[in-house]
Length: 229
Ligand code: HEC
Image 1 (tube, protein in one colour):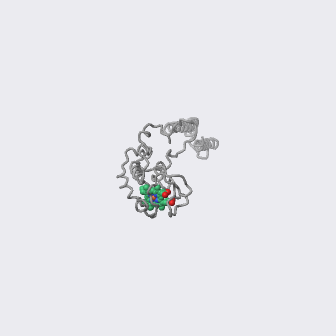
Image 2 (tube, helix red, strand yellow):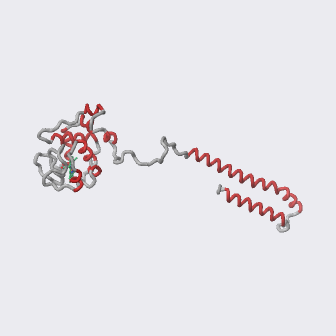
């Protein structure tokens, strides 16, 4: 134990001092009575030093055990390293639980009218009417089920064009939650709607923007649990 080293050094110095004194008792020139008591003290003092060393070592041992008890690392259920990474990577906002609820379940209580109201947030950049103009963003009439990046005359980002596929309800849900997280590189500089129920309202509204809207996914399917994706 390296902590003991200074103690050993002190002990050695002390022993040295005693030894030197014994060899050259004339230097400090103690009186005869003093010298006699010094001889008597000799072994007593060595005992004290050894006692001190032993005591210190025991003390360190005790501290070690106590510290081990206080700072004991939690036992892992499985052997391995514990990585301090949150399980849900793109999160951090409140309304966390609603966010994880499947959109089909949320759509069960969605309201088109509320959605139309919420969609005012989008109107800075989007029109919703049939044949509406493209603004900063493309017109969104009939966007549910339509191929991505397909609005004629709109200059989509490379990221959006590269993504391909159709706008399913699930993908719209992800995109509106966090546009730039869902399609990195998109030009849609909109923070996203974190509240699941509000997104469901907006999606219900978007779904209605069609000559013959497809029925929304049924809540019963979602509640059943084993719904096909
Ligand atoms: C600040 C402007 C802005 C706001 C606000 C905005 N968007 Fe967008 N949106 C864009 C832009 C720009 C694009 C094109 C993105 C690209 O090309 O990467 C886009 C693209 C989209 C697309 C893909 C359309 C397609 O044809 O592929 C959808 C869907 C969409 N937005 C929905 C919404 C909804 C819903 C809202 C409101 C909740 C919203 N946006 C709010 C700018 C905006």
